[in-house]
Image (cartoon, rainbow over all chains, first blue to last red; front, side, top):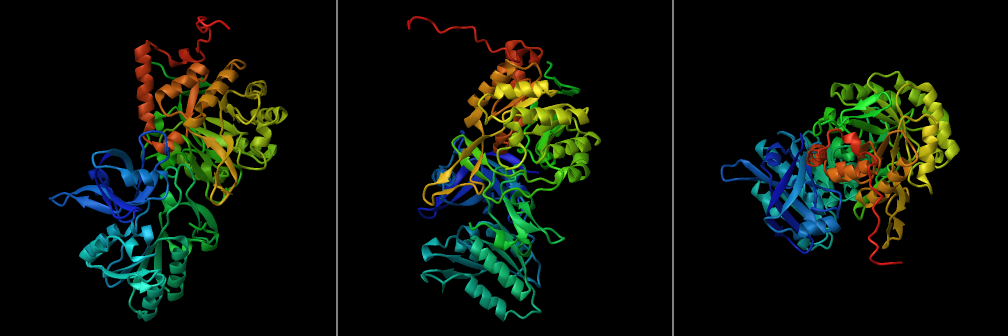
Length: 275
Length: 312
């Protein structure tokens, strides 16, 4: 059951001109959060901007006893709401509604988990990496961005024992080119008898490419989709994606309550709007 | 304190109704809202069969409001009765079903089917959706069309019939009168205002459907004026809506002439708005010594004149 918390901003860690991590005091949401879930944040206290914005829960914060005390979000400045979030100061309060949505389902050994992130699509993977670490599942993060300066928080994954593979489009760090290239190589090298599940979040073309690779290589693949959302609770029908039901027919399916995590093969990628 | 309101054969415990299209089928909100505490839940518009609606993007934010062009995606009346209505009954919700049609016959058929189902409190006729080409608003934008749909549905149901009016007409009061004369038990207004937003960098419309309906606090003063105009020409109950965000906003509609109100867009912003609105109504009644909330309906005092210390 989601809660709406008038959450105090604990910290705003500015990573660059465009990216920041905002931490909120929200123990009840933190306790209930599962990997890959999201919150809806009201970025102003007035009527402009009016609607809340969806954000993956980036970190579950803990107090000195290890008890969940809050959450953080990984924010990229794009429009009015995300610009306000770039500027928030500790002590301010914002309404945070959550946790929401269908979470990732982590895998257990002997299966490995491969997380593939593009840009701001890194956001849902830290909570997943923690859940996988608890299960002692061997985990790899494939993380791509345009340039080295846009790869963030890699140390947080290192600390969890995650193997990290980086790629930048300009070749300034890691593998030159797109992250799908090292992913494809790894999939090709992996013996079929060794199970692996893919978890993907990033730009639509990247997710589509990963879904195709997973299909070709016969690997399970979940994608976390981000859509324009009005309410986060299934009320407005704005966040729909074309997804197949069991019988195979695609339907406009609400990302907020049936996702944001979907089996990649349910999505009709030809009909997805570029994002 | 008495907050009840009567619409035909239906009595609501209070005047707060979740607006159609803004509350799913109600069951989605079962975990965050006590559905039984609402005056009623107006569920998402239903056709005879399932509809997929428009391709996204379906909403865009605008100053103090939003445009939507969902395109009446819906599960159809049969799946609603089989899957959602039992859950709404279990939660003791008072249910108003919003019904749609691409033809007059479809409205009548959907109304007939729902009249035989257990747990439907009233029918709201969607003759005002700005986002679909066929049916709907083509009835709601013509006086003979409004008369035809309302009187045809009236003939096949004993449930209260509530046509939902569009603001996209020159004289909304004439449509209110046509609805009353055709046998409507109440009217609801306003649906959204036809509107448009353009991305100047790509020069493309921000909605796939090009145009959409504007809702939210941005439209509230226009909606209040329209409720006021309708109150002057009809006797039947009016359900007012348009950007209600606070109890004061709801009271403004009631004083203008609404017997009940619907809340839509602001439920997206704050799904926990309902107890706050209820507390606000109680506080107002206590502060003003009002025992029966219906006593304020249409009591706007327009007799006062501007002080004439400037002569014109």
